[in-house]
Length: 339
Image (tube, rainbow, N blue to C red):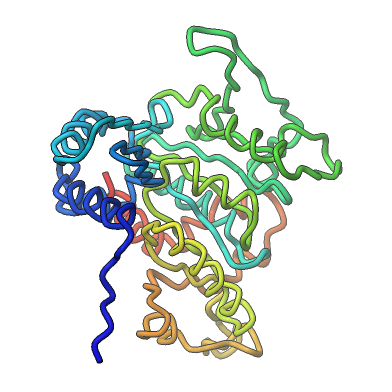
C-alpha cells in the first residue's frame, strides 16, 4: 500500500505554489533564490488572497515590485499584499548567536566588525543581549547615555561612533550594575526600536549580538529583522555542543541560513614545551561539527592566546582580531560574499 504524501488541503497546495513561483526570483549578483535565502517569510493564503513579508537589504529594493508581479501572475490570486521589512540604510544584517553564555560571542562580534571595517566596509553593531549587554563595556562606553533626535524619520536613537563603528547597546539604557529585567511586550517593543528606530546611516553590515540560547529576544529578532545569515559561536565542550544543537534547531525552524560555526577556546599552547593542549575536560572533536548529523559548517577555530589571558584592559579585547588575524579575515570573506 502506497501512502500519498502530497498535500490535500487547498491552503497548503496554494502555499506551495506561492513558494514555487517566488523561487524563480534571485537578487542581483546572487545565484540563490529568495526562498532559499529566507527573504520571504510569513506566507499566508486566505482564499484567493496572498500575504507575504519581504525581508531585504537596502540595496535590494528592486525585489518589491518583482515579488508583487510574480504573485499577481499566479492564476488564482485576487489580492496580493507584500509587506517589506528593511532596516533603513543597512545592506546586510548578520546575527551572531550561541547556545550558551560565556563562550566569547561578544568578543567575536567586535573582532569581526573591526575586520570588516579594515576591509573598507561600513559596519554597525547592535548589542541585543538584553540579559548581559557587554559591547559597551568592551568599548569603554558604559558611562555613555543614549541620545535621541527628532527628524523626518520621527524620533530615533543616535548610535555611538566608536573606533569608526556605529554602536547601539541595550546596556546604554541602564546605569552600571543595574539589573535588566525586561520581558514580554516590553522586550519585544524595545528590540524592534533598536533595529528600526536607530539612525544607522549607510551601513554595509549590521552585526546583531544575540542573547545566548533560545527565547523571546531571539524569536523577536528572527521574526522581525532582515537577517541574511546567522553566525554561531561556541566552545568545544560536550555540554556547549548540546546547547548549540538546540539553538541550531530553532534557527532551522525559521528557515534562516546559518553561515557557520566559530569554535572559540579550541586549544591552548603550553608555554614551556609549545604543545597544543585541550582547554576543556569534556572537549569534543572538531569533525563532529561537520558530520552528517550535525549539518553545521565549522568555519574556524580560535585557540587561547597568552596575550589575551595576560592583559586585563580594554586593549586586550581590541587585539582579538589582530591576534587571530587570518581567522577573522577568513570569516570576513564569508560575510562579504553575502553582499
